[in-house]
Image 1 (tube, one colour):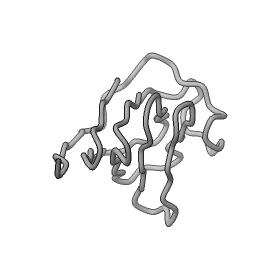
Image 2 (cartoon, helix red, strand yellow):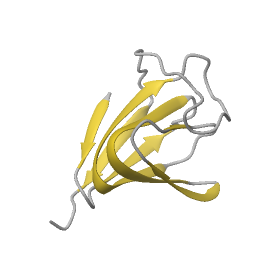
Image 3 (spheres, one colour):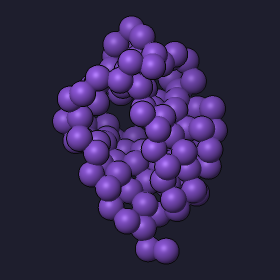
Image 4 (cartoon, helix red, strand yellow):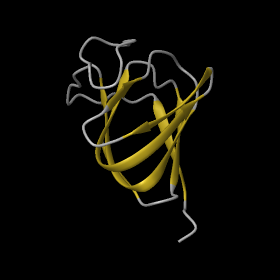
Length: 102
């Protein structure tokens, strides 16, 4: 699944994103997730593997293009850029869009 996030637009990933891999293709995306005290900024080529469930929020820090796919080996605690994603995307999450202020 491919998502374009203009600057300041947010998308909430509801459900359980565990096992999904988020990859930043263009721009910069900000990411936060329930149960994780760390916020992350992903640049082109960087990935984040959702190792647990819990709502996540993405925001286009700069106009961004991201892909979300099911990881080949399920959940992973590998750091960004260390997990490959398969093209098979499974249901179980819901995306909720919130417009930016532009």
